[in-house]
Length: 572
Image 1: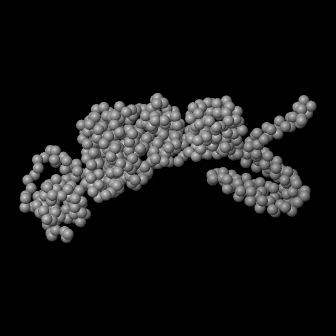
Image 2: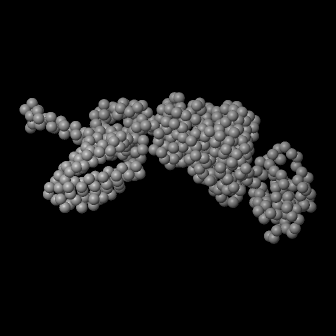
């Protein structure tokens, strides 16, 4: 046993050794220079002919180091330092380390190599992580998580992340409740600590500490990223610089957040990507006079800006769902696969609460679409400030939303309204989002509370994107369009007189062709053709599509058909 009072020199040396070990990273350039000096003296005195082997040893060490480096500037630094150290040591072994100008060269190399080392952010963060790991037992005791341990830690682009384990009986919910205390214990800025549950173990969690906010400034939109409605859309960037990718085909989506949180920005990103897809038709509902969606009007097949228009639009969406469902049922198809000729239909509704309040019949139609529209590729994209059950029309709309995008909320409980019951307790802290465009997203495959920031879509971006893609927007498919026209004709127009001579009970195919061939210039409606042939709507739709693909018939007006040629009828 060494007693400090009896051995002050030993005690002082032990203290210096502890300091040297604690600051070993900062002292690395000096210790490396000292090691080269000692090695040069030893090899020069005992093995002066070994100078020729030092480059080989230096190269082997360099290869080991390069495997651990993934950034170009770090690799260049390692190569330069290894080359300089190897050359100096070879010269020192041959002629002696004190031979001029080797001492001066060593000092210059130490300073030149030390400055980048001392100022390197990743090295400083790694040192901080090492010291945090050593101090974590004391920090954990102070913040109420005694018994937790650090299993591993990794430095990344913006800070560091660690895999932690809890003592038996503790849960991730306990950690989430202590996040402000953890930030205080680590000495970070408020909002710098992220906590995620470990999907493989209930007694472990992942902790991420950000040295700087990667979302401190807006992220410009790079443009449309998906060639099809079936491809995922890039909404923005996570804090680890990875992309937020969400697929919207056959998924209803809800975007929620307080005024000024960036809902319009998220909608613009989604609409901008969908506008570039050749296999989706866009309808819009904006009861604020079109203030949000009117800039996209040239890419929207329909835009409703009044309660009456919204009710008509959503009623038509239900008709499309019905028509597609009937056709799929008769053809034994389970899913509507979007193509440019049979596109998906996405109804974008800005501020859904206004719709539910001012147009309850429209809300009822939206409820029907939400329940039945997925399989037939008719989906809703709704945005609202606070999606309470009353604001969402007391229907199934909110419960049917597969994609939940939550921006900043004013009250903690609003997180559960948008993301679902229990989200707040599970770590989805939407009330801590501190800038427009920052959001959390919950969807299939995205079940961890990772913060992201949406791309910034400027007015110029909207104008340029709409101008580029408006000429290439697809029309609604004939099946869906005919369903709308047939219903309109039945509700508003008297039935037309059909010539009884056209009816042929024995050959409906020939009867259909005869009717199309002898139709007037304005054509015949699908309802007329059903009466003439005695066949169902689906059969008529299918035969019209076959004639149209063979260039034998065409749609002369919305919902009205006639033959394009008076030649012989098609062979059976």
